[in-house]
Length: 371
Ligand SMILES: NC(=O)c1ccc[n+]([C@@H]2O[C@H](COP(=O)([O-])OP(=O)(O)OC[C@H]3O[C@@H](n4cnc5c(N)ncnc54)[C@H](O)[C@@H]3O)[C@@H](O)[C@H]2O)c1
Image 1: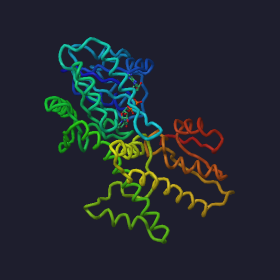
Image 2: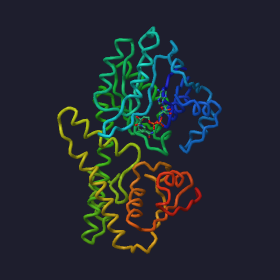
Image 3: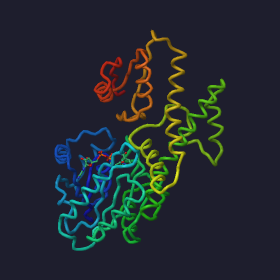
Image 4: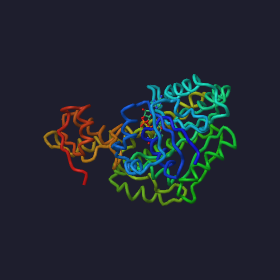
């Protein structure tokens, strides 16, 4: 089957590469992390992401290297790019990893026929058009193909997506990207949303911005109900039963966190500023998430004295994950511990180790087993 290049085979890129490999594509994966590449080559990579270890073990067509030249094989004319785009202090994304890969590609000979670069990393609206302008002069087109996946279910989310979003350089390349996905997508009614690069960049951020807004809204209405002495679940169930609203993501609990939702929501607001618009919903949602945590903290303050021990079980941003980034449970625990409460954290060793490295003796810790 066709050869496909993937640059950046981290959490997202490796799952994508494995899904492609399983349906017979000849994958050429590049990653700058030599130790990591070695663990993929030797099939000794340890991953908490379901299916990754077994798919890797069974893989036959996954070729990997640390050298970018590896994907510049004349037989490869599609290269997916899944390198990091960290958030900057102002909430926009740092595109320098993608820029670096593209500059390195330009340092090689011009391709014999047009080569298509497909950006999977999350970027700011307008970025891919600018990159296309630069790269197309050298025989490379740019398309955008972001993923709607969650840590802990990446492989399955890629196989069973609600939609595959394609911001295509042109119809032909859009058809090619769609055909590739159709080889491994197993959800029969998966929607293929095809549009311009910028439209797809906006869609990607807007989906996550909407989800954060819905979560923050649910928690705010829940707080209001609790403050009135009512039952927040009854209220939210009733709101969600309206088919125009729906009950998904409309539950009362900890605020949203993790490596994607908060940053995509903030970036949406910044994206508006870049074209002289205001998108206050993005800021309001971010603020509501903090206010909800404050509400939860006050509830603890009312119900516990400083002599009581408060126990938190499960500190990651969501269940079945090792990620503590922007975990609202953890941030609440930090707030309480800093106020002088004795706080015991219970979680698996890989989670406790991360927290201990940051917060040392702020907490008491208890390691619990996986089951
Ligand atoms: N992981 C997710 O759940 C998820 C979901 C949606 C979007 N995304 C987006 O996908 C992008 C990648 O995220 P990730 O979670 O896979 O990150 P990651 O850090 O797990 O993987 C990125 C990989 O790129 C490699 N890399 C960096 N510079 C490189 C270079 N010059 N050449 C080759 N490899 C290079 C790194 O070594 C790393 O292995 C980000 O923009 C992120 O926002 C991720």
